Amino acid sequence: MINDVVDTLSRHSANKKRSVVVAGHRTSISLENVFWDHLRKIAEDRRISVNELVTKIDRDRDGSLSSAIRVFVLDDLQN
Image (cartoon, rainbow, N blue to C red; front, top):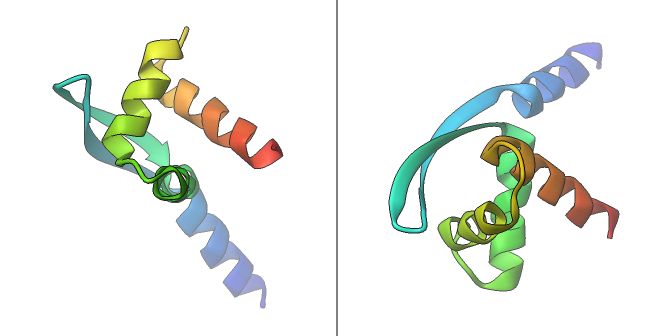
């Protein structure tokens, strides 16, 4: 049982770098898997691509894009 919990935490907390297109420009973003998973779910629920969603987040951000995405996902989870 404890091994299952550790395996789950390891998978969710592992950083994954992915390429996205933000406002027509390709860039790489490094996020934990749990954030990528929820970002894809939000995009699917809104019927837009992850690239479109990240572009919208990018337009409104103050800090780094990775941080803005994490805050966006956390805000979505709270609502």
